[in-house]
Image 1 (tube, rainbow, N blue to C red):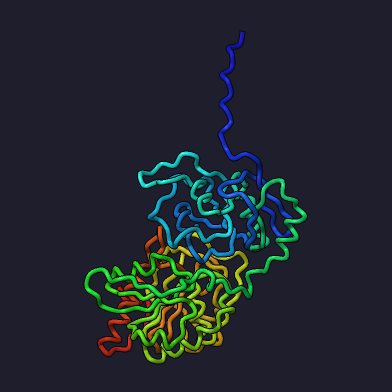
Image 2 (image 1 turned 30 degrees about the vertical axis):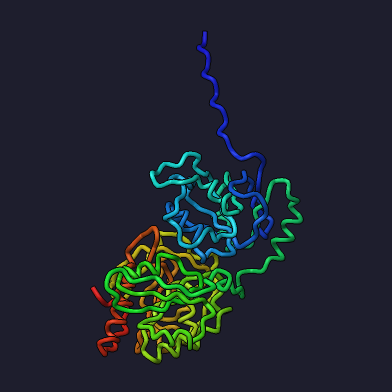
Length: 394
């Protein structure tokens, strides 16, 4: 006589109804709604970070994008009011395999689903994110949409295909601050930095303030005269969303500031804008670099950094350390995944830039020395020197 089998556990509670992700090539991924209900359209990209999902959600560089996390469970430590990079989520939508139902962290104030719903972010869970990632790696980043299961697929597909592609889009103006503001220096003030906000993350001004810099953050549309009137010791050009080719207005300001030997430091979109200002080209990557585990070779130091990256465009490189069309610029860092330009410096002027996030909230922190290099350039200028080499300090 066989012993009775134990009863099956009850199904896990979840959102009522269904939802789906539809790509522009017609590929469909079904799941369950998470966060706000509705339709969200944007470019679909994947992020390979295992932690830091709240920093990802609030990174303005993700404006206009539906972000899929490759880590199978997201939301394990909930959400809080500390791990944010802007006023709230900036993503167009969010895609996960599984959202943790019971977050475990003493800092948690809400679940991931509640946080997304509070800010009106359309999201989906239960998606086969491995299959989605492999599809994007093969076909490239593409437009897509999230919608409730009862939304007509043919209507949604037409909407997706009519949505503008990322090439040519100027999105920085939509996420930039409308008014200037100041982040005070921690301790004794050493320098005054002007930060151009193209979608700045809160950690960047904080990194500078911790190094004795008072930071005046200006809108992306700020004119050269406004920057110079503040008499800055250095200019920081931030990260941000969209196509750098759609933001030509900053090129002249970059060249003029550099000619005055005011140090310039750019990251991500700022890196691309600086490169273009000196004659380089940028291009759209097949599926971009999004994650916290990208290896980069520092050519000056001969060392490898593990970096946090989030960008869909890159600077077009050439042979060796040269950048076509930009004779004054040399490559200082190279991406070890695909060989793309990950950092640059001007050979004669105090201009440095990297394609990744040296503030790297939540991590890794291998590249924070770049803020020290920027401060060193400002100190060198104050003492009458002409240092321009990035990454050379120990």
